[in-house]
Image: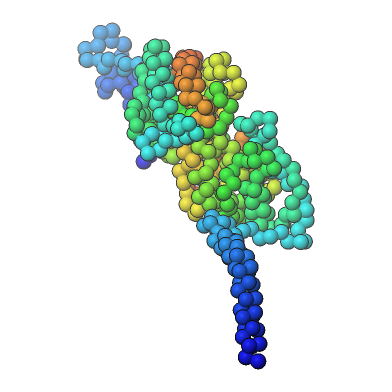
Length: 230
Length: 256
């Protein structure tokens, strides 16, 4: 009897050791995978925290114009029409289109904004002034240069202009701060005109906070002798 | 810091020939016959102010701890634009222009310090030099502030932050002249200057343009070095072409 008991114990222990030998490597692999998933980068964590609200099933699917680099001319933007479920709320709508802009086109060479940049928040005042706050990557990962920085800003402004008519002018912040420039060239201290209706973009609004309120120039009081507008 | 753009006009009014001395015939309209040889000392007529384009301020962008655009081959924008500035300076001086530089070594003056150098000159134009990260290699683009920036122009006093506002039209004309000369040499460059909201231009109270060569992405820096004499010569020709269009606001009442 005692011999049988010992045999059963040895067999049970053998099975346990065998099971452990098979299971432990699998377990280790799972732990490693889980660790990768649960250790997001700071940027990823911020992205998840600030993720725009997922599209509501009741949001209508509409045609949206996104402005990325033109395949024919790398110095210009071209509209790409896609279909998106967009909220009717202008703030949610702006977040949805800007997140789509950040995600980039199918051809990554045509993107205007760096892939690791994220929209942190978006505010819209009743007078149409909007503030878009982007992560630091927008400034640190954008290629330095007048052309590339102006394309980045114009793609944001024109995409908002085409899809969120309530936005009249736009201020770009980087991680909540006002920067002098995007990456050394294009001015971020001013508001960008958005509702240009075909006029030139990249304009500075004259009467926004941060700008000095000034009287209009007339021929009589223009001391510099230079016409204010052509 | 405020820019008193009205100062030249005020100064010129103070020096106006109409400011005759007390006791002169002009001050006594009801006086008798004109006196052919005045018994009192006369004030010499004011010397005509130098009008037109007197100085070209060259701004090699970035420098110091700010290298600007960087290429995969270790090419740094801040080094390139300094070399380019020397080439442009040589071409401008050959045309008889006086040239000042915002930096001639590896320093990094602030945007405002660079603008200050141009704003302190009488009859200056300002050229900031850049090399891009992107764009078709071998092309050159000229940029000016958007026309709509002129709408922030003021009456008597112009804020430092909007010093460029009254000069937007002149800057555009200047930019087109330089771009035209550049495009003759560097095919693929645009025919006219482009608009961009450039921080450096905003605070500059003079016709001001930015010039950007493409690009630091070239495999060999020599490709960019070879462009520099041609760019310098084209800029000098563009400045010379623009010169007759630029009349410094002054007592003559000449407006560009």
